[in-house]
Amino acid sequence: MQYQSRLGVEVLQGCSLTNLKDEQRHEFKQSLWEHGVVVVRQQSITASQLEEFARLTFGELMFGGSRSLDPDISPELQSRFVNILGNPKGETEPSEKFAWKWHQDKDGLPRTEGLDMNALYVVMLYGVEVPPLDIDRQPHSTQFLDLIEAYNNLDDQQKQQLESLSLYHKAPIFSKEAIDIPTKVHPIVSTHKVTGKKGLYLGIDTAVPVGMEDKSEEAKIFTKSLFESVLKSTPIYYHIWQKGDVVFWDNSQVMHRGIPYDATKYKRIALRLGVVNTY
Image (cartoon, rainbow, N blue to C red; front, side, top):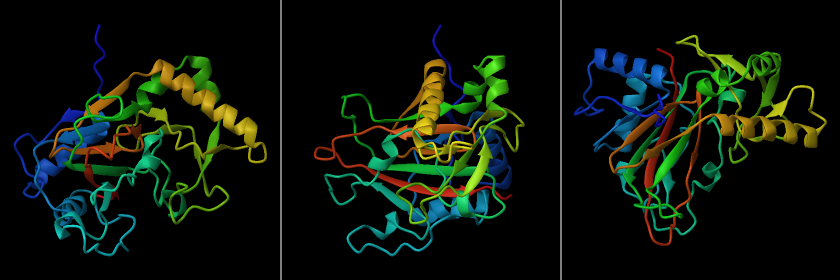
């Protein structure tokens, strides 16, 4: 029987993100909380329009905001909170190499007072230009891992063990906010703030189990073993990119990773924006 993921549902068919009614925004968010990853296809929007969509749909709480315009890149691809991933100027070293490992986006969450690590932090990625193939000559994709399904696939003994454990989290290594010690504690088993479903929250490979702060090797073995067991029991959803796709994911319930591509052959331009839902 072929695996059918709940992730990756297409929504708002035939609509533009620049012209939505309030009820459409509400239905869109309900689909996102239910499915974890949703896609809106055939969009043609600017960075400023993507930012405005995020503000109207989710709220004002976006991280970053200090970017200056690059005179060598089209102004339509740039705005205050939007980050450009890929090689927009033909670079042979793509900017998003750090995202080729499994992770949950955190940005400013660890150091923002009052926000849990499983806050409804939504990332949207808009494919302006899409490579046809990855380095293995497969269609260009982003992989997603359903952490609610991962929790459900555990046996009762594993669930009981993990529900008593927490991880220290800090900002990503590449972030300007990254510091030497973890900054926020969060349970490995989390409850989704809208659906009430339980799932795992694993963060990224710099997360440290509480009680293993001074046992770096033991901590690495624990987190690696846990994640390998999750990968073995949980099918991966591949989003195959088409030009004009905007993919949205809820970091409180999925992990993801990008797939390497040959930047000497192909151009990739993707606009990324992250926002915490406050409405």
